[in-house]
Image (tube, rainbow, N blue to C red):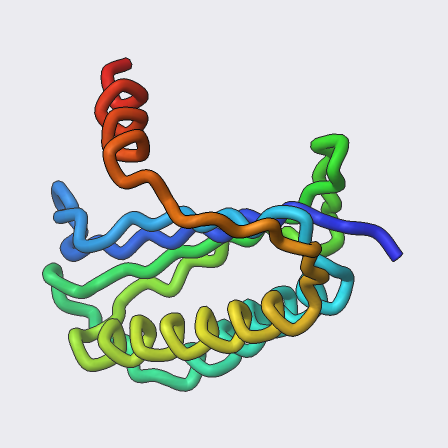
Length: 144
């Protein structure tokens, strides 16, 4: 069974002329199992089916949602059969966008739970954290 890197990009805009950016989000899940890959692919397909049933807002101020899922091997090769390109749901009203965002958060929770259940752990070697040294590293490393 292989491992995969999956990137999900979501964009929500409002309006046809000079669209207003409402949300832009990119999440990447690294080194996930085949089970997680299949779950995310199924979730994206279910999302499209769910929102095709919503009414279309034809006003100039309608919302537009697009999302894309890309699956890569650890070597960086894209697996085309799961990507299918960017999906665009044009002409949504505010209630439809709110429903989309609620659905996305729900699916993210399920994805995280599945990742946690399929991730192996290691034997941790714990010690008390040196807070001053940690703060120093944070300050020093943040100056790029």
